[in-house]
Image (cartoon, rainbow, N blue to C red; front, side, top):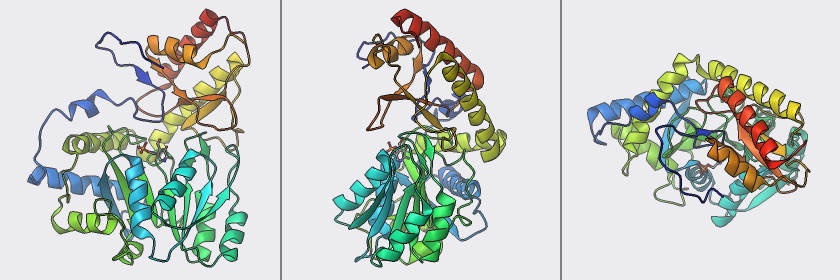
Amino acid sequence: MNTKPTIPTWKDKILFTPGPLTTSRTVKQAMLRDLGSRDFEFITLVAEIRRRLLALGQVADKDYEAIIMQGSGTFGMEAVVSSVTPPDGKWLVIINGAYGKRLNLIATTLGIPTALLTYPENSAPDPVAVDAALAADAAITNVAVVHCETTTGIINPVEEIGAVVRKHGKRYFVDAMSSFGAVPLDLAAAGIDYLVSSANKCIEGVPGFSFVLARRAALLETEGWARSLVLDLLAQWRGLEANGQFRFTPPTHTLIAFAQALRELEMEGGVDGRAQRYRANYATLLAGMTDMGFETYIQPEDQGYIITSFRYPTHPNFSFETFYERLNDKNYVIYPGKVSDADCFRIGSIGRIFPSDVRDLLAAIRETLVEMGVEL
Ligand SMILES: Cc1ncc(COP(=O)(O)O)c(C=O)c1O
């Protein structure tokens, strides 16, 4: 896919993907400076980022800490799992897509036992089943679930599951990679001990780090549990608290860009403002795609406004590779599917894109279908 070399142009392609995403020019421009990692200005900027992240999780004045971890989102997931599992701990992993599976893979790779509650990719997990699973297995110490399962775009009921996890006194980890910053979530109210997301999703920064929002009391009980040096969550937090610096080289330019992205999120009206634009993108996309005859994989009541999986048309002339490449040639980047039991492709509604961009994409899709001789 996309094997042809492309002639550089001044115009970037528009990314309708789950990330990295289209970012604003001002976020990219913010990176055009060098700051030393021990520079006072950089340390102040990191402290400001950490403060704003807590505010986004609605826990600024509560007992939570923001910990930035170098690397992509998966590094943040692995930092949590490897650092907060007691020596004899066991996870209950709730799975309805690729990222739930990845959580389990991280634990098993580390030799940590897991119990699984697995659902079809188009079904939301049932909190009653979580209750039963926890009641049945006293060895479980930690529970993990994905908020927006980016495999399909389904939104999982993290608040309801959180109430069950809290009732059983277990530690609760939510992978909110593709939802944090655009889907309102009160961490304390949902009983979340650890939440992970990354720079290049709904906050609209560029890739380079993940971050964990951790309940301080839960974090403090993890002393001596880390199974990795670089991904040691408690040590990373202690380092940042001690002198505002990272233990190892931080992605300085990405962090400068992220501070700008956070300011732009605030200018847009915070999480609610961003949610409003992404909802408008999604509504425009859904109406246009449905009008053309495309079908979604997820039922509307479970579907979030972050990313949408569409089933391949059954017309014999349809080939996803050709569809993708022709859209790419028109400067629109969509995403392959990740669903295991159906042929789908995905279109994201997130990043610095607006309903007018979605309408342009829809026009390009219509044109491409005509070129391919695909009738829906
Ligand atoms: C829900 C979820 N979890 C984890 C990840 C992994 O993040 P990364 O690819 O940045 O490692 C993603 C990436 O899209 C995601 O959407």
